Image 1 (cartoon, rainbow, N blue to C red):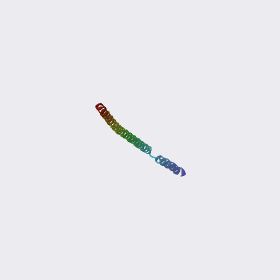
Image 2 (cartoon, rainbow, N blue to C red; image 1 turned 180 degrees about the vertical axis):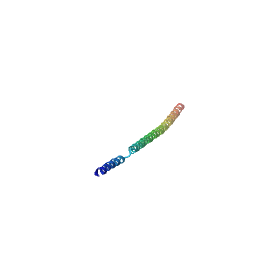
Image 3 (cartoon, rainbow, N blue to C red; image 1 turned 60 degrees about the vertical axis):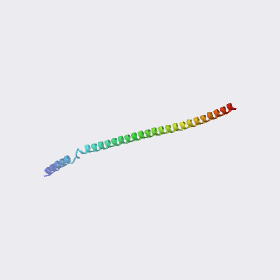
Image 4 (cartoon, rainbow, N blue to C red; image 1 turned 135 degrees about the vertical axis):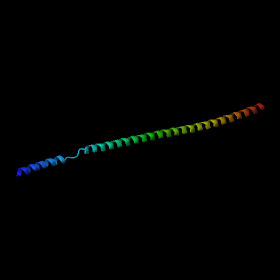
Length: 106
């Protein structure tokens, strides 16, 4: 009498053990989630790098514009100095001419 019950109990344990295993698709779901996370990270890094490069380019362009503006201002100052010196030289030449004419007239 004990043998058939024991056999049924053992068979029941084996059957339960066979169906109690975790389902196989759980591992691929984790791998898929990890893959998605890595892809998102890579895209974020790429976006960050692109934004950084654009910002660098804008800074270089701004520096170039500032350099051009500085060069224009320097050129303007140089021209102003040249005009001032030329005026002084012309005035001096006119003064010398006037003195020479006055001396010649005496």
